[in-house]
Image (cartoon, rainbow, N blue to C red; front, side):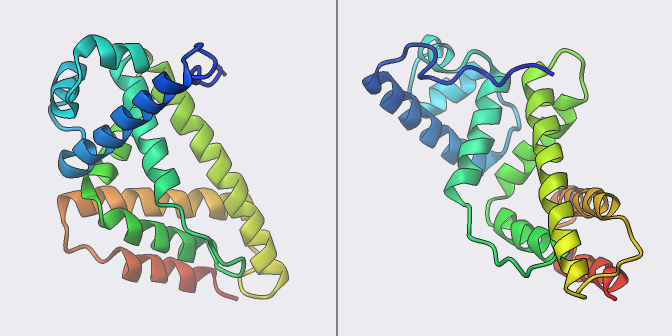
Length: 197
């Protein structure tokens, strides 16, 4: 497994440079939220963000690194506290509702997942693999807690349920990009009922 991309601090960037990087990242989030990752190049993004291609390359070594950082930052900005009694499917439903507010970021996430499957995309692969592993761990812990409290079936493996819920949610979001009338919440509710005791 490769290491996380170097942070601005570890690259020796000054506080002013860190602030400038954040400004660029904030503007890039707006660009991706508006148009997704379609027809994206570092030059095109630099132009829309209002910086030179060289400046963008200084702060983000590659388009792949920029895409990952845009997605990470957008998720940090939009994080909401989650009730401990929520089931994994309720968590994914809530996440999908938030994501629907900014379709461009759903498209960006789908692009990152697709890129992670390519051999020459190590930044995307590391990001997506790490994200899936973290989500599976968090959700399987939540499944076990729900099982112990009688809110979920106990005859299903918690790790398998976590992987299934992520697959269902991500797959439904991809389908929603193609068919906006798809009712993600209603479909996830079917999975919720199948997992109920």
